[in-house]
Image: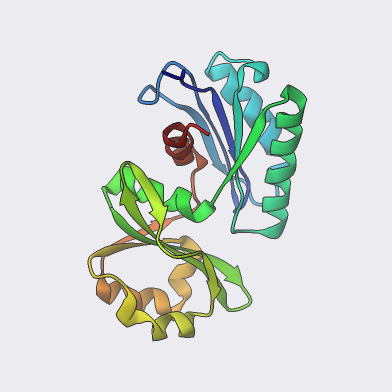
Length: 211
């Protein structure tokens, strides 16, 4: 049986700066993580936060087996910062990187906090569009049903008959201003409004996949 992995997760794809460590002591043990809202401060905050979380976990960077990162969708600048940081950390310790969807992090959070097994996740893409994806539970992992899309709210509303009944709708706070966000809930049983996704939930993806 393969041993558990030490996994470092970082995400700066939205206004949040999020870092988590899953230590090799077990998949169900306490996870060390830090989450803060830091718009336009990712560059200054991310590395000190990584150091702090590693200290909490009593690990050195050299003890990390995999560096996971939020690959977006999200802010272009934020995604670029996150990937660059992950690349630098992984290169320095000669370990692999794994990119995980920001939308999946939100779906996984909805499952773990609200037991939602059928989730639509959305992030504002600006320019009148949204990033949108549908996830369903397989095992303990929220799995993409079709594909992540960039779509205009009007086009999404046209597909409303295809929206699963009793699903959860998960969006970031800014989406509350969009008309579609008020219409789709007529078919959704649960509405979750996250200020920003938390990368700590991605630990389940990495731990279960054992990549």
